[in-house]
Length: 83
Image 1 (cartoon, helix red, strand yellow):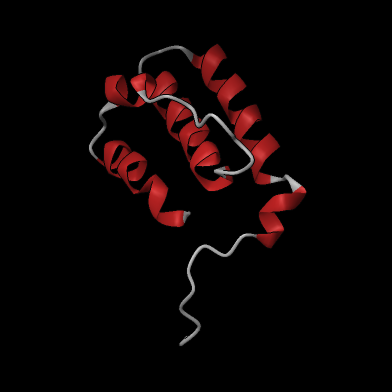
Image 2: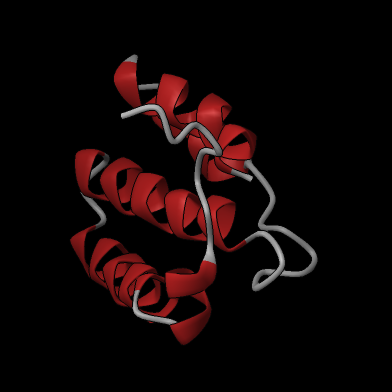
Protein backbone atom coordinates (compact mmCIF):
# COMPACT_ATOMS: atom_id res chain seq x y z
CA UNK A 1 0.00 0.00 0.00
CA UNK A 2 2.88 2.40 0.67
CA UNK A 3 3.70 2.49 -3.02
CA UNK A 4 0.17 3.63 -3.88
CA UNK A 5 1.02 7.08 -2.51
CA UNK A 6 4.25 7.68 -4.42
CA UNK A 7 2.56 9.84 -7.05
CA UNK A 8 1.21 12.09 -4.30
CA UNK A 9 4.65 12.67 -2.82
CA UNK A 10 6.13 13.45 -6.24
CA UNK A 11 3.43 16.06 -6.83
CA UNK A 12 4.14 17.59 -3.39
CA UNK A 13 7.89 17.64 -4.07
CA UNK A 14 7.38 19.67 -7.23
CA UNK A 15 4.61 21.90 -5.89
CA UNK A 16 1.94 20.70 -8.31
CA UNK A 17 -0.87 22.11 -6.17
CA UNK A 18 -3.59 22.13 -8.83
CA UNK A 19 -2.93 18.50 -9.76
CA UNK A 20 -2.99 17.48 -6.10
CA UNK A 21 -6.39 19.07 -5.57
CA UNK A 22 -7.73 17.19 -8.60
CA UNK A 23 -6.74 13.75 -7.28
CA UNK A 24 -9.72 11.69 -6.15
CA UNK A 25 -9.90 10.25 -2.68
CA UNK A 26 -9.99 6.45 -2.50
CA UNK A 27 -13.40 4.82 -2.70
CA UNK A 28 -12.57 2.81 0.43
CA UNK A 29 -10.49 5.14 2.64
CA UNK A 30 -9.71 2.63 5.39
CA UNK A 31 -8.64 0.00 2.90
CA UNK A 32 -6.22 2.51 1.36
CA UNK A 33 -5.38 4.19 4.66
CA UNK A 34 -1.86 5.30 3.74
CA UNK A 35 -2.98 6.81 0.42
CA UNK A 36 -5.94 8.51 2.09
CA UNK A 37 -3.77 10.06 4.79
CA UNK A 38 -1.17 11.09 2.21
CA UNK A 39 -3.84 12.76 0.10
CA UNK A 40 -5.13 14.77 3.03
CA UNK A 41 -1.54 15.78 3.85
CA UNK A 42 -0.92 16.86 0.25
CA UNK A 43 -4.27 18.62 -0.03
CA UNK A 44 -3.50 20.56 3.14
CA UNK A 45 -0.18 21.70 1.71
CA UNK A 46 -1.78 22.58 -1.62
CA UNK A 47 -4.55 24.59 -0.02
CA UNK A 48 -2.16 26.41 2.31
CA UNK A 49 0.14 27.26 -0.60
CA UNK A 50 -2.76 28.64 -2.60
CA UNK A 51 -4.00 30.80 0.26
CA UNK A 52 -6.94 28.75 1.49
CA UNK A 53 -5.80 28.27 5.07
CA UNK A 54 -9.23 27.43 6.50
CA UNK A 55 -9.66 24.45 4.18
CA UNK A 56 -6.01 23.52 4.79
CA UNK A 57 -6.79 23.26 8.52
CA UNK A 58 -9.75 20.99 7.71
CA UNK A 59 -7.44 18.73 5.70
CA UNK A 60 -4.98 18.66 8.62
CA UNK A 61 -7.78 17.45 10.87
CA UNK A 62 -8.70 14.75 8.35
CA UNK A 63 -5.05 13.71 8.16
CA UNK A 64 -5.02 13.28 11.94
CA UNK A 65 -8.25 11.29 11.77
CA UNK A 66 -6.65 8.70 9.49
CA UNK A 67 -3.15 8.90 10.94
CA UNK A 68 -4.45 8.15 14.42
CA UNK A 69 -6.86 5.41 13.30
CA UNK A 70 -6.25 2.15 15.15
CA UNK A 71 -5.91 0.35 11.80
CA UNK A 72 -2.75 2.36 11.08
CA UNK A 73 -0.83 0.43 13.72
CA UNK A 74 -1.47 -2.81 11.85
CA UNK A 75 -0.20 -1.59 8.49
CA UNK A 76 3.16 -2.67 7.14
CA UNK A 77 4.52 -0.05 4.80
CA UNK A 78 7.43 -2.17 3.55
CA UNK A 79 8.10 -5.85 3.85
CA UNK A 80 11.90 -5.53 3.96
CA UNK A 81 13.11 -6.47 7.43
CA UNK A 82 16.85 -6.44 6.61
CA UNK A 83 17.47 -3.33 8.69
